Length: 296
Image 1 (spheres, rainbow, N blue to C red):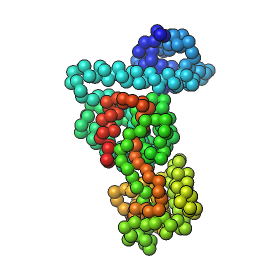
Image 2: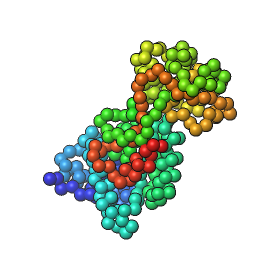
Image 3: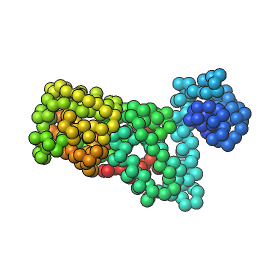
Image 4: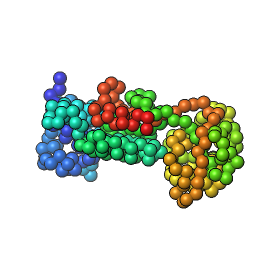
């Protein structure tokens, strides 16, 4: 077995995160020479190059470096958890929970998660990052994030998924729309109108595929990366939209109103899931976060 130490793992992960040996040394409160030597010893012990060094002093991990960094993070987190269990106040969660969340779900999930951890696990710092489903899942794969929150249709099947809540697709209509007062609307009744869809990948592609599978061709007039822009356009009568998680209020950013009737006519179901890299046991902080969000 290679002679690898926890300190070498810690310094290597710091370099990957910081992008340079200098910045990593500052973050770890050690000299640049000591950190460089530690990483070099790690590479010799493993017999592979983990970093690509450039003249600009920036470094990027090799493919094997990325793989090792992801596993090293889990090893370091496991050690931290073992220490927490036997430390004073055993059983109390501490440390940092690193969460990624898709742009569309973030307003629904992140404030709730922060508040629940503030009340039940005050010694845990919730560090959240909003991004596209593809980006936050890549961060989970490389170990930079502990978990990602997104829709099941966007989830990578190679990653572990924990179900948080089932969702149903809703139409977004202006209050002046002829179907605005119905308890639910059929997709066939609105699909011939202009559509305004979210442009964050893979939302447009998924919605278009669902509609075509049901025999419909959407007329996409506008796309936007901002859900508030979409709601305001719908409220002004420029088209309909589709959402999985309607907001608690029907008022748009500019003071107009829309309605969110449930949609019928599309068979494919969806759900909100927590995605993690491990296929088996997850760290206690992550388990606590998943439990806190079930049914939200």
